[in-house]
Amino acid sequence: QVQLVESGGGSVQAGGSLRLSCAASGFTFSTRCMGWFRQAPGKEREGVTLISPRGSLTDYSDSVKGRFTVSRDNTKNTLYLQMNSLRPEDTAMYYCAAVATESGCPMAISWAAKGNIRYWGQGTQVTVSS
Image (cartoon, rainbow, N blue to C red):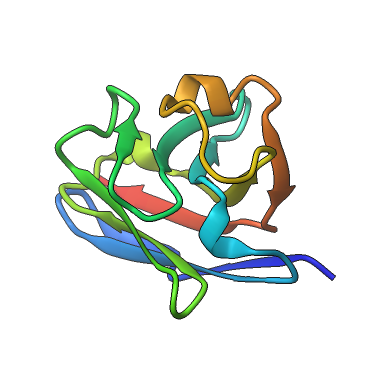
């Protein structure tokens, strides 16, 4: 069955860094755009970043642009999110997701956030203290 298993979350002080990983199985990872989303308590889920199947194209939300970097290793079926210069407002549950389309997608996280996700992970908590 399909599995997306996130890891790497934790607690960090403002200005610190974390690296999230997402191990995928049960589907053809290398043909799908992958994304990271987050949801803070009391807020709607927010699209953070999207990466193309081969990793050559990316898109970021304005709130993380310049601080977060998404990457993938198709040989390991793993998605990554390097988060630097973390802020308290980055505190949220972070979810890995695979888009519904295969062999590419519109490269906009806003598109992915509009119901175009096929598979979701269970999430990993990131807490940033001031």
